[in-house]
Image (cartoon, rainbow, N blue to C red):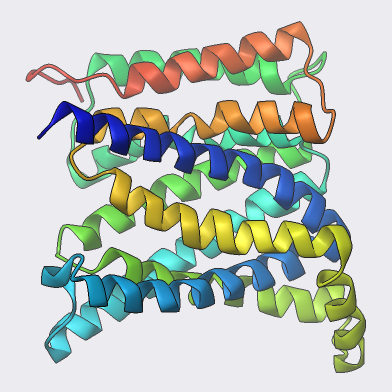
Length: 313
């Protein structure tokens, strides 16, 4: 592979991380306007719909032609993968969105969510995959970083922080689920489209019964709120940019880039989330919290370092 192409694709992944990082601001702003469940539902409906023309364009260009489902078995595997990934994504999104709705700042949410990078290899133990010493060290550093970032004078975390941390665990399961189906030659963009529509259902039912109070008569007012002003901008960003565009960029960018390097680059979303929260929402972090962020990012970096052949379980 050429160094020029590798550099270009690495920059594409940096752009992907930037889009995902800024999305935390969109989620905090949009969720506050519409309610967390309404935001989840509309965001993933938009995301899935945006990917439909993307799939057409990629098919016409012959991209990933070898993964396009041909047989009935291929289509069943694709649907199964999309539903499984969508269930993980839906649960993770509820934890994350509700946590931010309850007060977790965008920057802090970005770092807490990024813990999935440390959790993925640990959960891999249940799939009989061993972890190197660097991963266990990363876990210890993360615990210290989380304490500095989330604890305010006592050993009790805020409820929103706990929910966002739970979201990182489910996102780790989501990544392992994606890996399982991608290794079976499932088309990634098609599976993502199905997962978005599946994830939207996790927002649909609580949206109707909690935020719309079980009444269809409140739907017009909900749509009027969602598709005007700040809420509309947030929804379009989270649906079009964070879901449709960023996922496509990830597919393009990961080609010809070492997977370890790609994961590390994409973990920059946590850094961008803090910068976006500071620049757009005027959120601030104390020196203690900033040090916690630095430790978590160091742990993320450490967890992604190439492991030696000998690993410990």
